[in-house]
Image 1 (spheres, rainbow, N blue to C red):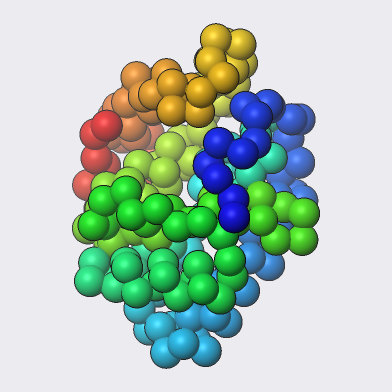
Image 2: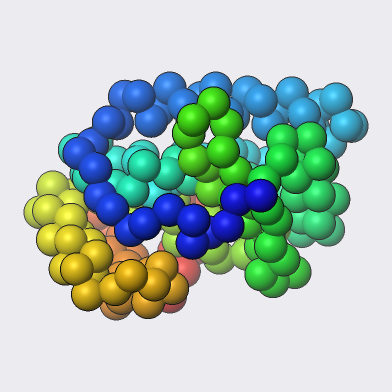
Length: 187
């Protein structure tokens, strides 16, 4: 059993390439499990998100994946992944079931989202903007370090980033050169 609060809030220097390799391997494991359980067609996309997906950004050593599925498939896909891959699944909302796992020494937060849920869209846009704007990446790193010093509680640490994420989304809406097949949501 892996609990979301099992690991301390601790930033490590960027291991972007290694984290990307872990993401790619985990993405293939997820695709294999989905296909073996007749759920492959339910997967719309699998994204590497969070700070480990941004080059040169220190992060908690947890690789975040957003799995986007048809809205009605969230529960079935998340239950199947929990059964086949292990970990602890939470039904946060009807459209978002995170699964907290470890595999081969690496911690993963696997978020199964319904396609209409804004959560995955926020993650993708945030990742993309931080990749394109080094000044925002540096500001985000500083904010994360400050919050890490202020909070031992992951929920408080995460909530402390909300205003900044809103600013990042505003940057994306102000036409910073990236287009999406969806409207950029708000937090």
